[in-house]
Length: 117
Image (cartoon, rainbow, N blue to C red; front, side, top):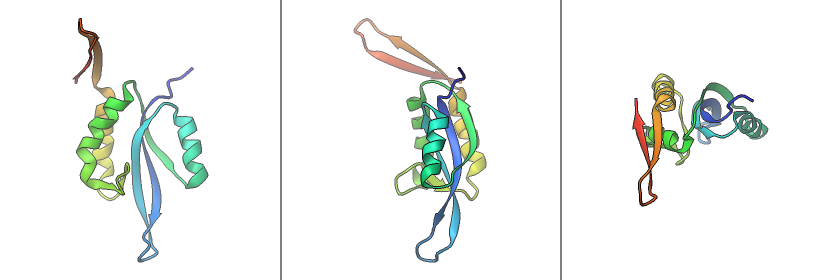
């Protein structure tokens, strides 16, 4: 069975309620099953999968991307305006998915994660 868990980038359109015009929006995030995620998204709106990066430790990796894009996010979600952001978002999500993350436990039982390039 192929690995369906990882980080993704999708494109959709939102409507500007004031002008009535549609504008392109990027959505990024984590998923434990990309096929189910895309099925769910496309029931409510049209989302086009632009990139998918299989990886583990998806919570940690998603937080790395979110920290860089907090100022661009729309309505406090993982949506952001498409214009001039796709290339940088693609590179950041690709990098976050390729970091080596190791998990270790100390003698007190506390779990730590180490991130390296």
